[in-house]
Amino acid sequence: MEGRQKEWSGKALMLMVLLLVSFVGKIASLSVTVNDIECVYEYVLYEDDTVSGNFVVVDHDIFWGSDHPGLDLIVTSPGGNTVHTSKGTSGDKFEFKAPRSGMYKFCFHNPYSTPETVSFNIHVGHIPNEHNIAKDEHLDPINVKIAELREALESVTLEQKYLKARDVRHRHTNESTRRRVVMYTVGEYIALAAASALQVVYIRKLFSKSVGYNRV
Image (cartoon, rainbow, N blue to C red):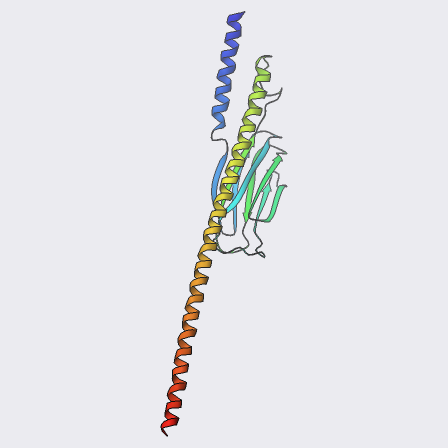
């Protein structure tokens, strides 16, 4: 009996290690340059799998004012139906249940002609149920618990990637703002120097004219 319990414990431990190791690399992380419309494809193996992810515009080639329309993300199912939409934003999170298995299309739309670099992360989560796991009474709950643990870890990883991308974007924004402030300040100094030089020239001309009148 004790030997059998050790055998099951060994199998369970091996299964846990394999599943947790398979967790690494399950999140697809991409850097997408969006000129007009750019699409990314992800295959979902099972119906009702949880598809989650996020995106952040990390590099603004142009300054985004308050009136900038932002980027759009439209997710389309294999049947051609729209399952998620994000409108006019520089970053967003998404999560939905896959209505069916197949190839899903994630399309970004950039209303401006200037290219924008987007950090895009996507994960397809699957928790096995009684229909697709081994029928052994010892392994059933272990499989489910390991899958739930894996999904929790991947949710944390997705959030970390999202926060990191936002941090990169904020850093780029701060650097862009600093450059603009420096350029504006330099421009002010140049304009002030030019105005002072013109005033000096004008005053000299006035004095030269007054000296000419006095001589006459």
